[in-house]
Amino acid sequence: MTKDKKQAQNDEAMDTSAANGDENGAENSGPSYEDKFKYMNAMASPIAPKKLAKKVFKVIKQATKQKNYVRLGLRETQKYIRRGEKGLVVFAGNVTPIDIYSHMPVVCEEANIPYVFVPSKEDLGSIIRANRTCCLLMVRSHADYKELYDEIIEKVNKLESEIVKTE
Image (cartoon, rainbow, N blue to C red):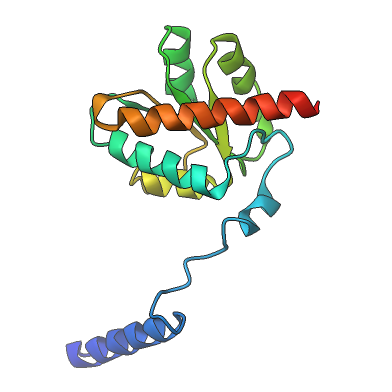
C-alpha cells in the first residue's frame, strides 16, 4: 500500500470519528456519570455526587503538578498512611475483586482520614494522566489549592455523617 492510500484511509477514519459526535460537535466519551454507578461494588460508600467528584478531580489535577502531593496506588497510599501522613483518600468504586482494597476504609477511619468513592478507576487514571487505571490515591493539602481542598474535606465529612445517621 502506498503512502497516498494510507493517508486517504486515515483521513476517512478521522471523518467518521468526527461524525460519531453529537450535533454540537462533542464526541461521545462513554457512559455518563450516573451510568457508571451500575458497575460499582457493594462497599462503595460514601459516593461523591457529580459536582463533588468534579471538584475532587480538579484538586487531583492540581496536585499532580506538585511533587509528592499525590500518593498513587494501594501500596504507596497505605505506606504513607501508616507513617502518619494525612490527606484525602479517593477510591474507585468499580474495582473487582473488592478484596484488593476492602481493608482501606477501616485504615482511613482509624487514622481519622476522610475518604470518598468515585465511580470509575478509569477516570482516576485519566485525571493523573497515567495510561493505566488507578484503584485509589491520596491527595495532600497544598497552598495552591487549599480553599478547594478544605471545601471538599468539609463536604466529604458531611457525606460520612449522613451515612452514619441513616444507619
